[in-house]
Length: 227
Image (cartoon, rainbow, N blue to C red; front, side, top):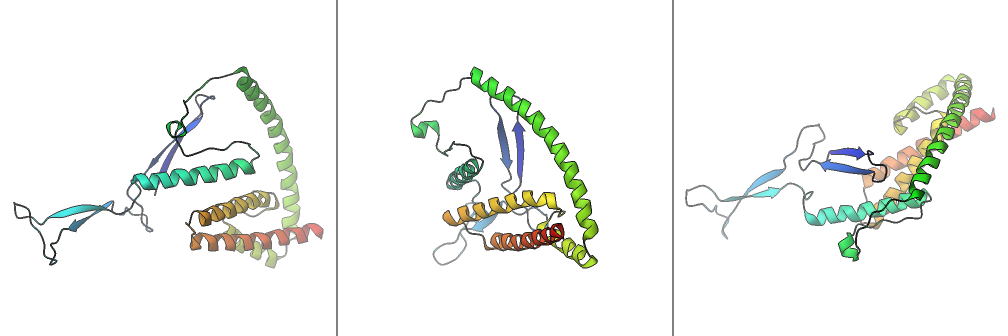
C-alpha cells in the first residue's frame, strides 16, 4: 500500500495530517496489482449461468479488504494502541482513543487560552537553545568519529561496512543512540502486533538481524574508545 501524507501546520492550535491510501496494491517488482477480479457465477452443478443477453453472469471480487469498514476500525484501534505507547515513551500523560465523540457521549469543544500561547513561546525559546547545543555536540562528535576511524584496522573497517548494510545506515558512534531508539520502538511495535494477533515473522527476523548487528557495532566502537 502507498500512503500520501500531508501535514498541516498552518494553524498552530490545530496541527493535523491528511492521509490518502491506494486501494490498488503495488507488487514486489514495483508494478500495480489488481484491485478487483472477475468471478463467474455457477449453478449447483458447476455450470455457468447466463444473462438474458447471453453473457456469462459474473461478479467483482475485491483483491484486498482495505476498503472494508471492519478493516478501517481495526486500523483505528491499532493506531490508538501504537500512539498511546509512544506518548508514554515520550513522557506525555495523555491517552487517545479510536472512538468518536458521539460514541463516547461527548460534545466536541475547542477553545484557545493564554496558556497555549505562553507554552508556544517557551518552546520556541527552548528550541533555539537546543539548536546551539546540538551544533557544539555535532562538532565534538565529528572530531571523535575521525579519531576512532583512524584507529580501526582494515579488518575492522570491512566489518563495519558489512554491519552498515545490515543496519541500513552509515554507522558512526553518534548515530548508534538514534539506532538504539529505533530498535527499541521496533521491539515495542512487534510486541503490540503479538497482542493484536498480527505477528509478522519476517519483520521479527529483520529486527533480530539488526539488533545483533547493532551489538557488534557498539562493541567495536567501545573497544576502540577504550584503547
